[in-house]
Length: 551
Image (cartoon, rainbow, N blue to C red; front, side):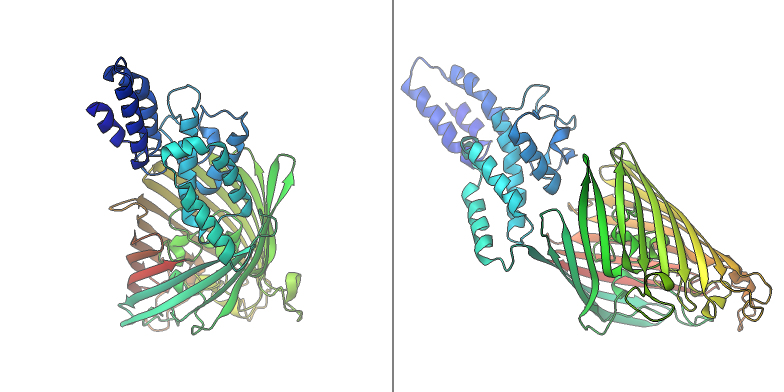
């Protein structure tokens, strides 16, 4: 009897009652020996022992769809219901061969174990309003169907139902949830000889009218300015020293910095994803940047610098516009979009089509599960004085090309980019990009363009490696190196102080380590070094300690 008792203790506290029941039955029937009792009950105990750990251990490969679990029958209604929950919340962990046990059919206990894992994941989100009413209804139906098996597993059905009831009684809206992010950063530069401490905050209201669409209304503010780069001979360092929390600095006033709507359009068996931005749209809002673990959409959980976050090609143009993504194959799509910087302005030389604009076309390809490739083209028109990359990244000369003559003339740009990412192992990811931009002034005025050579070539490239779950699950160690956007015509622009051409390239190297204190707080120390911030020998070193709160 001791063997049965201790075997049962290994399962879960909820299975203790089941083991005691087996023990009582064995004592009531003297002919039913201990060995026979163990033999008849060991299979179910082994199943429960193994599958009750679903969603808890991360030692097994992550599975994101029930389609990948070969021994779950797609003919059962519960299959589709659980598949939908798994794909939304990524809450089932399977074995490396993507089966639960060999090739036999999935038992109800095993299915209930997967359901239990999803219940626990969804329970953690339920209080934040991050679970739709449709998903809650599907979960309730599954709970009712597998009530007996869940009870045997000791699943916290009562706790889940209680939290659902609390949410329904206290939620401020049935269609909207609030997400927030606050960054507090201590950062200093050797060239500016200053250490500063400040903040950036974002509050996003996400509203869904159909359960599949999302209206995003984001309010933001901050007080952290960008370092100038010290004694730059041509004024400043452009965007080479920008960190993500520098964007939107407004003295901690509250501004509407993003207003966008996402909705799928079903065409046959495919969904075309559509995007509309009325304010603050950028190309990476709807186009994949293929830079995992560095890209966090200028938030507080990715790379420190704007350059390491994504290819500079996505910084060409911003504002109001639209985009859509058309899938083909299993992991490939065609994405197109258009953004106008002054789309709301009816003045001459502004509006949707008469002012600054950029149009994007991108092909994304997924090869297997671990390799992604993106090919991007952006056509831009820029009014005189409009920086090519918005002064978000790149040197001052690259943002104001053709020997800075673009300060006095409208200009056009054609940009070509390639981005790729490769998952070397579950804990190592490699990504990189290359970008080339051809710039031409819209005038041949000899005063503005005395040598009749009114074009410029802008180059940028970089790559990084991310190491995941070092010291703690959810942590990221990122190392990124590359060359920020620079002008090849800058060699003709003479430094008036040193009388030397601006022919050096702004080499960038960055290292950061994001450590998650818990699900809502992370601390990220990091360093950034940029050589030739103004395409001379001027360089800057930045140290940062970033703390991010999400809620």
